[in-house]
View 1: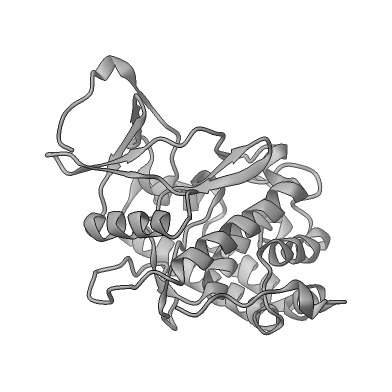
View 2: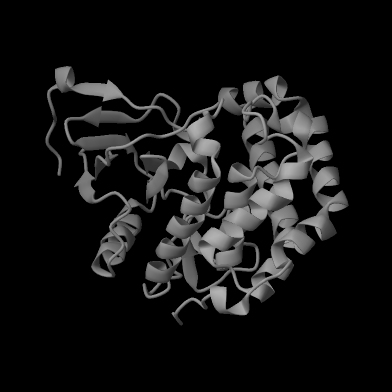
Length: 289
């Protein structure tokens, strides 16, 4: 689709750091900067829908100027500082369940490894299934306090399901020390170290994570934190003003050092919470790709 829409019928949508002030809704169509692999991503989104996953945007087309067009998904999206409704136990479980639905559909989609999938947040160990890799609050649509859709698949890349869960946990538990969490997650009960193990368990339960994946999740979370730090470091080195300012406002590299030390010190606490009293019958393996 290459036609234009009346500018009077458009307004800016809140977006994450990578697309700040660049996402616009025009009627029932959302326009945003197109990633280099937009054609492959649109083919993937169509394939997900054919497999019954209706919780992602419907591709509309690409404008002549290169902007991507997607169908608008009605609902609420949380932006920082994150509101109470987005940090509830119900919301957290529903995010895990929605991610599981995505993975079940994605496992049946043939991935063309020759496509230039985004690599910056991709699983270093690779995989045969396309992961979302950016299930942050800004990329989850809610209705009535439950997650109903995922948007912004720009960082999608082949990887392990547990990698996608680990990245998601980083945002939603959150897997942050209390000092780092407080400015973004000001709701009482979501910024204290004592709550993180229980919330990580809620996410794993909502997803239906297997015992083996639960046992390895704490280390994968630490690995994901290192990858996210490198992602920020590249943006800062490029003098991206959004990331430079965010790094300054959030405590600089000392914050990242503190997060990594906090995760390392609590690794076994997280593992214990994930595995305690686990009923093996409550988890389901993903279908083979």
